[in-house]
Figure (tube, rainbow, N blue to C red):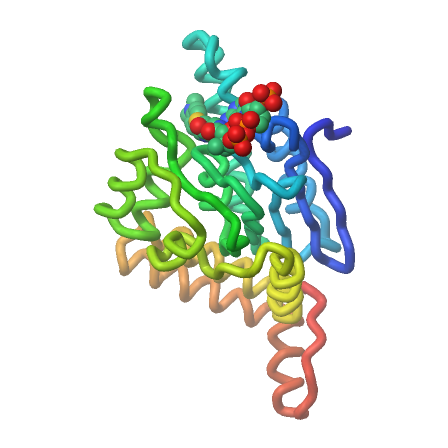
Amino acid sequence: MEYKNLLVEINNGIAVLKINRPKALNALNSETLIEINDAGRALQKNKDVWVIVVTGEGDKAFIAGADIVEMKDLNAVEGMLFSQRGHDAFATLENMNKPVIAAVNGFALGGGFEVALACDIIYASDKAKIGFPEATLGIFPGFGGTQRAAKLVGLAKAKELIFTGKMIGAAEAYEMGLVNKVVPHEELMKEVMALAEKIKSNGPVAIGLAKECINKSLSLDMDSALMLEAKDFGLCFGTKDQKEGMTAFVEKRKATFKGE
Ligand code: DAK
C-alpha cells in the first residue's frame, strides 16, 4: 500500500513510522488511521524489523489529535467507522509482539497522545505539550485514553487531565508518570534510537512474549496471569535465542540473537 500520510523507514532492524501531515499538525484523519493499521501489520510480519519507533513529521507536533475538520460533520454511521478505524490502528500498535517506542516531538493531544499510550515506551522532547482536550470539544478520549492513562498515572490524575482538558509540559508529564523520559528537543531521535538499539541487542522473541505477559496482566486475575507467564516463559526454552543467550554467558561472550 502506498502511504499518503505516513513515512516508513527501516534501517538495521529498526523501523521509524512517521505521521506525515505536518500542515495539520499530523492530525489523525481516517486515511491516516487506515495507513497506520496497514503499516503496523506489515512491520509486525517483517522479520527484519525488531523495534518500531512512532513519531511525527516536522518540528512542532507528534500528533495534535484526531482530525477535527473531518470529525466535525460525521453522522452516527461514519462516527462508528471512524472509531473502528482508530481501534484497529491502536490495537495493531499495542498488540504487535515487537516493542514500539513513541518519540513525542511536540504536541501530543487527544487521540495523538492516545497513540503514544498504545506504544510500549514514551520518550518526550522537552518541548512536548501533552493533554486530552476532548472535553473542550464535547467528547472524551475514545481511543483507549480513559483506560490507558488511568492505568499509568492512577484514577485521580487521569480524571484531572481528562476533565480539565488542560495541556501540560513534558516535565510535568514525567513527574506524573505519563512518559518514561524527557530529553532535550534536538536529542530526542538520538536518544530514542539509542534506546531502540539497546532493546534490539536483546532476544526479540523473549521481549515479544514479555510484552504479551505485561499487557495481558491488566485484564487477567493473578492466577491466570501467572499461568500465562509460566507458559510464555517455557516457550523461551524452545528458542535458539535462549540457547545462544545462556551459552554466550557461560562462554563469557556477547550473545548474538537471531529472533529464532
Ligand atoms: N485536527 C485538524 N486540524 C488540526 C488539528 C486537529 N486536531 N490540530 C491542528 N490542526 C490544524 C489547524 O487547523 C491549522 O490548520 P490551518 O488553519 O493552517 O489550515 C494547523 O493545523 C496548524 O494549527 P494552529 O494554527 O492551530 O497551530 P497553533 O500553534 O496556533 O496551535 C494547537 C497548536 C495544537 C494548540 C492547536 O492547533 C489546537 O488546539 N489543535 C487542536 C488540538 C485538539 O483539540 N486535539 C484533540 C482533538 S479531539 C474517537 C476516539 C478518539 C477521538 C475521536 C473519536 N472515536 C472512538 C470515534 C479523539 C479525539 C481527539 O483527538
